[in-house]
Length: 295
Image (cartoon, rainbow, N blue to C red; front, side):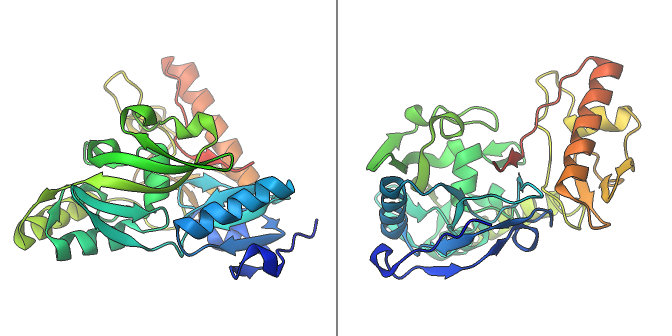
């Protein structure tokens, strides 16, 4: 494995060597990376990425790693993990939230501050950076509905993008194509009572109560635009319980793939491809992944 070390000139980031993807990803698969760094705020993240770019050190930025599939042979890159970026501050229209803030922390602050609008994220195991990256949604609501602007790192510059510039769509955004790294986002929220916020959180948590437990990446596929969910197409194809190696299509929710027998990333990838091929051959429906392959 290539050795990557960050000297004192980079700053006093917490680092670990090596970084084990299988212990840090929600699917429990993947090999190793040489090193991980944990910046504590958007300023530290910006400084770190600027220095890595200047020195030509390859890197990949991750959050909770709940919707990613790392490779079995790992990555020869520095991992930059945002989970220690937990800062939240008030703005005239709501909150500025750093990329590493979890949905749970965001909602606790919203309830304390009496701010309404983000309750659909209740129970979603994401960081705000990941949610902004993929336009995360639940219960028919999506992050773009509460975004005012997004602050990004772009090749040595700090850039604040308007909502329109983020080019949000269903489970997609400009960030998936342009290489920007999300530092944080300004959320436009409404004033609400403690009771109203608590009731809405409970409602969305209740909607998630039926989801499978175990090691997974959450929903693997986007819903097609034909009005039938990806899970329904997979179930119609008779694929619930289908297994490749240690990876299995959940019997509870067909859009989940569970690692229940020490699955490798290769097992998961083969099962994803098998599901796509089967649904396509039986119904002519093209399923597209919403999970991200780390490369």
